Image (tube, rainbow, N blue to C red; front, side, top):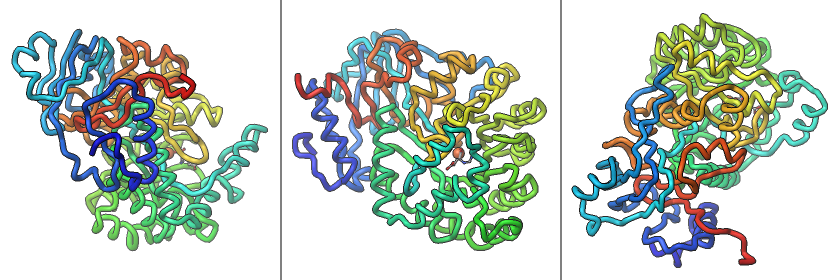
Length: 466
Ligand code: NIG
Ligand code: FE
């Protein structure tokens, strides 16, 4: 499809394509993607990216632990070759251009800017109905987050609004949120259900995620989080709720391949350690991989449980014990830290610095959701991690690329610029990755390349008076 004749069939996404075309001063030779359902039939093109000031490869095929997180594998004046959406070669430009003839490829001139892998946002709840602005104002005047939930608000308020929302409405909002994430350089995102709790609404959320995955350039990894809160009718009957999930919902989720992961909110007054263990053990037996919302508000021993179950990741961890952190590191469980949630809840940040020093593999993610963290801002994650958690810029980049991929069990296919991986990359507006946290709270991403195709381009000014 030619960019001047982009169809509006793709709904929300087509609008972004149009915006990016309007914003784009330079004439790219890439065809742009903008049709509903087009993802699966995307015509992968062959591409050479040249004149990058630095290719920040984040090279690796598994999670980076401890000191390894500082190694970004930078290639100065680098070039990357893509064939059929997969990285074919990466190295110093002089060598690459001797081996590959530009004549046979689309060529993207990076104009002396920095090239990185696309960001992997490994923890979000991006499909929900309605909003909780009123609740946010209560929290601003001092009300406690868990207190609000215990009196029927919080997650349960989003559950009511998500039940009432049509699939179309959820889809439209979801696509818009993915567009915003794309503008921050995210190329793979994890999405959780958990605003339905009942069978129909949980399945509805997962189906909407599936639809947005099909129609949006960002790849979506789906997680079933039916044990996210306890509805009023199940108060005091949490064990029964877990049994119903195991018997009635999990088999359908597995059978219809609606999710790859199972997650649980393991927290005081939500689901305890025993209930979480029972659910996740069964989920594993049925073939799902597991994750936990662990030790967020109260130190319950969620980190220890994650290690025991060999979960792929345990997330939040604000209150995780030293013992739990060490056990997770030993068992290779990724510690996913969500700084914007701690910031928004005015809680003490998780001990990411100590975790890295103790040899953990740390990932960073946004936790986008309608309550504890209504933000998909990758720049804010960088700001908080580097300025307030003593995580270095290099470690933060690792945490949002290869370690984000590892938190989704995808370190072998995404998260770095390595031969054989998906060609998911971002070009910055600047010549060094060091600008990422330096431009505080602002996205430094100029272009996003997904599977070898340009899907976002912010070069030039979007201001219409010029
Ligand atoms: O990851 N902690 C539990 N779940 C979400 C919050 C959900 C909400 O407040 O709507 C989280 O922070
Ligand atoms: Fe969460």
